[in-house]
Amino acid sequence: MYLQIKDLSFSYGGTAVLSHISFSAPKGQVVGLLGPNGAGKTTLLKCVGCMLPVRQGDILLDDKSLLSLPPKKRARKIGYVPQSSGRSMACRVVDIIMMGRIPYLRFRPSSQDRQIAFEAIERLHLEALAFRQFDGLSGGERQRVLMARAIAQQPELLLLDEPTSNLDMKYQLETIRLVRNYAAEKQVTTVVSIHDLNLASILCDQVVLFKDGAAFAQGNSQQVFTPENIRQVYEVDVDIAEWQGRKQVFFARL
Amino acid sequence: MKKPLLSQHPLEQEYSRSSRKAVLLLLFCSLLVLVCGLWFTAVGTADATPSDIFGALRGAFFQGGRLENANQKIVLLLRLPRISLAILCGAGLSVSGAALQGVTRNPLVSPFTVGISSAAAFGASLSIVYGVGPLGGTNTGIVISAFAWSLLCAAVVYFIASRAGMSPESIILTGIATNYLFNACDSVVKFFANDYQLAAAVQWLFGSLNGAVWPQVLVVLLFALPCLAGIYSFAQPLNILAGGDDDVSRSLGVSPAFVRISVGLLSVLLTASIISFTGVIGFVGLAGPHIARLLIGSDHRFLLPFSALSGALLVLAGDTIGRIILSPVNVPVGIVVSFLGVPIFIHLILKERREVS
Image 1 (tube, rainbow over the protein chains, first blue to last red):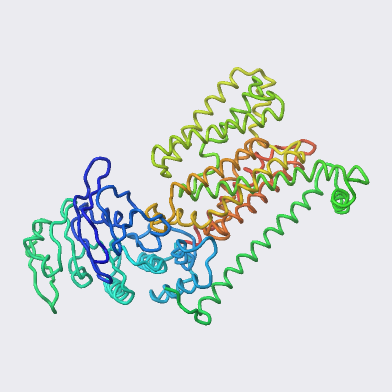
Image 2 (image 1 turned 135 degrees about the horizontal axis):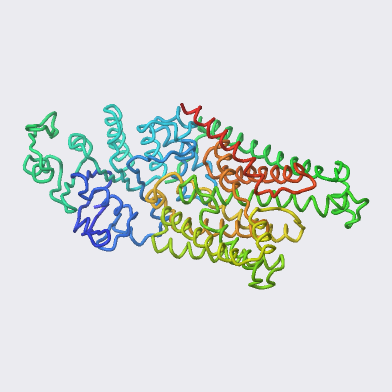
């Protein structure tokens, strides 16, 4: 297995937020983190990216622990796309995407760094916005810019925090297509926290369903998405139907 | 991982063109500051002609300090050090403001938010009133005391803020608290001062470039140049820190605490070295960066140099107006800068609003 999370626990000031999480994924697989608000999805994502100080458990990439790597080396392996930046910044989009090259350079981006950033711009169809100011963009456009920055990092592991939450249907689907294609094409293992179960069943090869900081169920969406699991985790009654080979979730009653 | 380079990406052309435009604008503004500096040198109670200025410069650099007339002496020994100190002071305070706004992600922060100015004022008052500290009461003694106390204040802010995890809020709140503390200390000293001492202590607070001499310029330069270069080397980390949350900068391999401590330390040193000589020149550190930001955007690779220029211009203009407006009385530059900066500042804010709506 390429990515291995081993018995990871985390607590904020004495309160346990994550307890004994383990899962693993081969190269190029998309793992979805699901669960109600406050179940620990984002915390896990930040632990995997070593943005929070992990003291219990281990995170292995290619059998090497990420925890002992120096920050700059680690930044060349892991790309992180935050939920969506509320901060406005009067910076050109191209410069923000170029920041993804920072783990690789001293001060000025080389022509190769620029080339890689431009390719990321193309992949996300941001050519028309490249020289616009970031703070003038819509939420969906900002999301794509942040995604392009993470891709410019050329990561081996991509972490996405609710990449579809602020998008309309068209961009939700486009984001999912993009993440799937990118993961498959570049063989980048991807971990996504996501709220929408139906989108998750399209996007993810494997899902981990969280309840109170622990993994309640994990496997592929066929195994995990059962009315019983969802009732226990979300306290909602649902019906599950199969539609074109995918599990789809419907509200059973209002 | 390495790929062969394609000939040239279509975006490359526009990228280098728009970068070139910013560099040209930067050169133009530097030239503007230089020209203003020379022009303002000519202005004053004794009007010097351009030939006096060039004569003085030629005399100083090429003829071993031989000067032809009194005007040239005025230019070389009174005006030029003052103009140089104005440029250094404006640039330094403005850059330090831009840097601190970046690390705290707060556009309301200026070098004085972290309490340095009131600590420096306290130090100056101590020296003026009680003659405390080395060379107490002399001009040099005041400078040393102001400098020492502002660094002490920075150390206090650092130790408290680092215990709270070096978050932007902890830095700002600790800064505001120490500001009040040193204000109170300063007031105590002033309360027990006699009229003459009180006048001198209050005068110090106005912030002025009166009596600037070359050795002062040299000392400030010695501190300012490394600090400015040091801050500029953090331009990209500042971009990351200002534009996202701390997790984003960690994910890009940049430690937020390290950047905050380094940039904070350099900014404090820069500010302290300047205001120890000039007194409190307040508004530049806030207005300079904002003027620059509205001109060029918030990319620190350009924001920092433009802040230096806008701050330099603001103090230069403020000091020159202060010298001539009630001549022969010199109105302290700290006062004029606020009168000058506030309308510009408000105009820019309103202009920005209109463009948005």
